[in-house]
Length: 104
Image 1 (cartoon, rainbow, N blue to C red):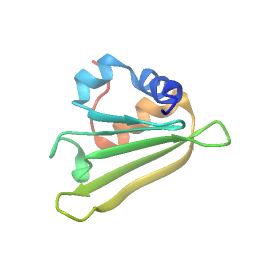
Image 2: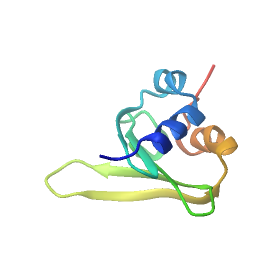
Image 3: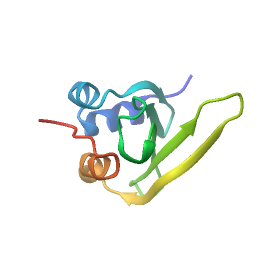
Image 4: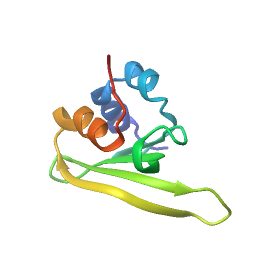
């Protein structure tokens, strides 16, 4: 069983329940050092429908915005990937990449 402490911390840094309500984020998957979730289709700019945030060895995050295509084969495009993201910057980076506000 995965330790979800890091995943829960990342979600809290994004804004927790407020973040979920504002962005429509769903289908959360957490692991020992990451969280990923889906966004509603057509909601974010550039067709982004999946976000993955991974804690790396430098104690910063790798932020990946993906467009996953439906179908029997797993096909996706990496729209943007940022390394060395600090926790304090997660909300602003999410908003700048997706166009979605995380709070009022």
